[in-house]
Length: 490
Image (cartoon, rainbow, N blue to C red; front, side, top):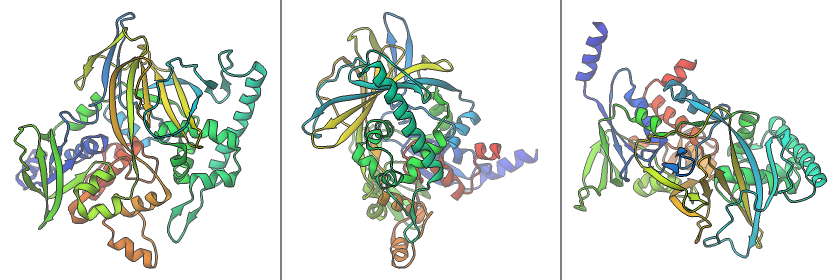
């Protein structure tokens, strides 16, 4: 009875109106946490410019007409380890969404050099062994094959060399901390760190950067500008860990959005502006076709979008966030047979689940394009059980070897030593000394003007899913809302 009376009293109080712009993982996780507030203080509104919620919008269900295999493909692909994604995996456990282990065999391949890095690439062979020069399942289990370049003796020697280099690099990650400048809190770059720990150049160019470049979907040159602390933390927390996939993210999306009554789709936010004690939102309502720009005032706003998008719609944040680099990436699903596989479902609740049993084997190829100009870029080719290929690439293709079943484009936030310092200042975790302190105080920070930011880029780490959950939890903390999966774990 007391609990019922307390709930009725909470419902009678005026609620804080919170608008969340963006419905990826960061936005939906923030919405979920606010909906779980024990005092029921928040009334949440979601804004999404697309026709459906963004988290699962690009995923598709495939069907192989020959084998009958039906498979849900997450776009972009999502795989995690418990070591580097502790908060994400705890959230999955709390929501009772299963994680299934997957056993990858990794192929490293070199694509014929191009004269320029700009423009669409020519079509590439869908044969997984095309250009392959190394393969392994685990560090202690290299794959020796006649289809790989070099003799058996050369492959064996190469495996020993790579294992030694990897052990050296991993040991350095545990024993040699990246240098941090005390005055500015700036980390040394990955390039400077690799030079300092004396990792062989061939191992860096042909083995380390390809896998990291595929994870971050950026060029090797951009990757070398990353803060060394990002990569070191990733290696120490994810090495020797099991890799997991989920049965699709639609279940996660459905559970996170449960209870949110005000969801505005096809509503592209154009401008945020501080008005008194609230924030005015102006948006373009595509759904009614009128071309009107409605406005509404909310008490608080959470921007769960990329930094360039946040800078565009909220001018006080533009100075800081517009200098954070971003890049376009493309995820493509191919049918190498041209006719065996078709898309059964797009952008709706899936009937099929990921074709994945515990410890199910999958093939992942890291294909590196080396340019005559000295640059290099790696893309990931995931060979799926249905026979399709999911390719994630930092550059587009003009033509394909295989039928294009699905294509989606995303914006990836990049990390640099400078952007790390900006993010740390924006989320309020660092303040420099002297004149730089004054500059930092003038910079907009998350929470100022009743506007917060959240996303995969809003934490001190690689721009991956863990950042979405960590930043959503930070917003919940600042709103005075308990995080159930953290409290349950503690």
